[in-house]
Length: 164
Image (cartoon, rainbow, N blue to C red):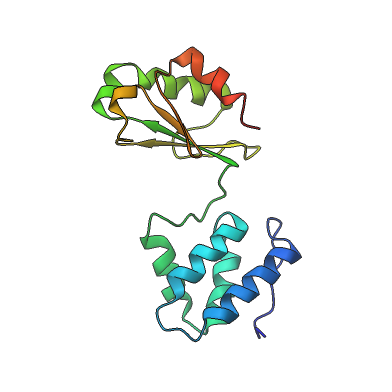
């Protein structure tokens, strides 16, 4: 049982809170488990809102600063909501030379999302990455786990229509 009262948060359902409780209870007595707890809780909720991190802190009997410190240090963690679909646009040299900047701009204009942001409806999150290691397919966009090569500014909109 966790003694900390559950906060109210519009993105966290009762079922999600139950899963969070199970995660915390299973690992709170294991030293150094805060990273695992944060990762698993983020998997449940989709991101780590302040209220959730406060709850984890109380449930694990850790200082709030320890939990926030870990969550803010590692790039694995997000404190802002993410979209249902993650778009990663490769900005490596091969992709850049072949027009990936136009692809990135087209996505941003069409879906009203900036690099590093999430669409208002949380359909997409857009991220520019240094290299995806698929230079032979340049320019490359990865959506979730799907790699799309030889992408143009026009073609990317057709590709994105398949991701609701």
